[in-house]
Image (cartoon, rainbow, N blue to C red; front, side, top):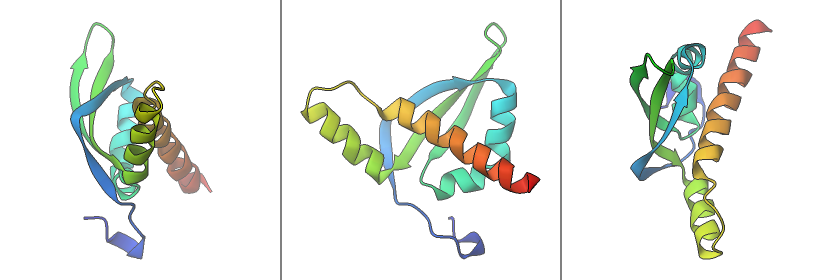
Length: 105
């Protein structure tokens, strides 16, 4: 799936139910532009419905890097709050930013 350009892929684990968060239209455009790279780092997602009211689009993440799952299990065992959604959103946005920055240079 992500064997392009001989870049290594990060192992992904399925998430059920999918993690859900929203992005603004410009963020969704970037997400689509860099979808291959985002999937290469182990994040698999589906772009959901656009809300005219909030002007945001729902993103459903159904696969995350395996290390995220291991971290989440550790947090739950220690009765700490979930970090899964924030980790996924930060990594998606960071990946987009880094890839976009490379295009500019």
